[in-house]
Length: 389
Image (cartoon, rainbow, N blue to C red; front, top):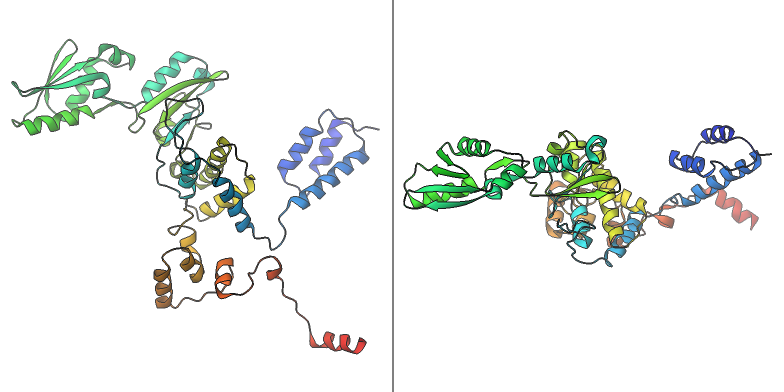
């Protein structure tokens, strides 16, 4: 006799010792399925068995397995690719160089980019999305006009492109005001032409002022050099070249919960270390899957945990995890051997020989697997054995 859905859910909610995710998957799988109480008990028992088999054995060298599981597919990756799936206009580092960037915890990736999702009110309407994109994209004087020098009058002439000015929802007065605010110089306006009168008399000062005016930020966020709008399913998504997560998430119309950047350190500073840990996992998985490689997420989770366990994102290298190991021999075996040994000798450090590397160096069994088990017996039990023999 089959039992009701509510009974199945009640029984599954009573389960102890299984992760919530597995219980949720069981609920989803058993929805609209007719089963008896006996069959449900059998399913739960089989799930427990499968889960216990999937758990790591005691004394398993999980670090070694994770390193091999990520390192081997890494050898199959292309060295450098510069396209982003579906967004050809934006350059982004992929493949092995990107994986190295992630585990090295670089301060800033070589090609920072953002994926900005929008709130439901505007995500389906192209016009407000385009308006928001212009608000985000860095606009300088050189983007909306051409700059030249008049050596006879020692003046700088800016010919503004009226179409570009209007497209970015700006006015010529706003542009003139911004230039005047930054330079503090007198500016004349004639239609779409601005004439700037520098105070210096030398040609060198004139050229320096041209460079200053060329890079004046008129609108947008500094660092976001390019913006691309794409329609994905039923909504528009903005992709940017350059990253400024802290500023972007405060814009009206931006869905902060779904907006992401490939700059892991920036995520750590803005959203905290847990968000950075998730970013490391997602970025590494995306980089591998983009190349058609599959690595069990648990190996990458272990690496992400090691990189973020101290509350800051650390690289897997001599300036991070490997360089901060408690074992002197392990640190020395990795890089800058002499420095580590000298510093340890001066400080009088003691190596407890608990890790893999240091035990291999001194030629004794490592404390993992069978090497972690010690057999202990008492003299009385030995006497009993001899007497029986």
